[in-house]
Image (cartoon, rainbow over all chains, first blue to last red; front, side):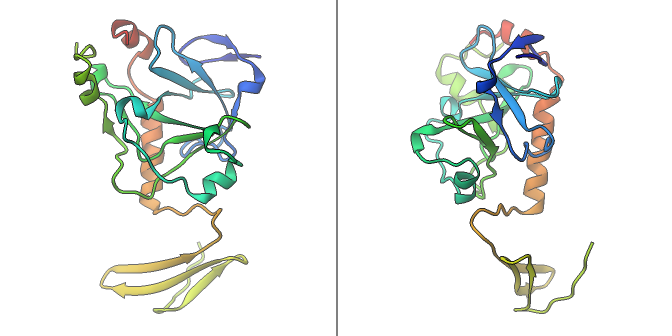
Length: 151
Length: 74
């Protein structure tokens, strides 16, 4: 099916790849269906695009790229809501708030996106843990790689 | 909004399986105990609102992401 997207104009997606957020995403409760799209020439970031609303798209990334030790306990209500049976079915993404320059961008470690890759159900999980920041810096991890994002 | 007065150790029940109990009152702070099934999501109001705001901010970035990424290939 064809969908209109915020960043990539019109794209064709396979319907079986649509991720269902039964309760939407906080702030966007009416958006129930999203597609995960690749950002051209970029292996680090993806786009979580609403199927229904062109303007609603999140830039997402794998939090472990920036915070390799990031881990948390998934609450039962998430396991139930997404019908998770096996740990290996779980994918974790984090929403990035882009800033210019890019190195100033932040990721939301307090509320990761959990996806059951087997049944394509997704949910934003709000951690009751004070250690994780809603606006965690990404820049430190870039400096270790030689600071290629500094410009 | 329904408003109910409760004293320490008194509770209210919501539906069949949710119980909110006033555990302690210390000055302007009230400690609430929530008994609910494990599939019920419970958050402090301001935390949930902060996540909503953060999501909104992430969607409405005043930055041309595609152009920014072209100039910062990763």
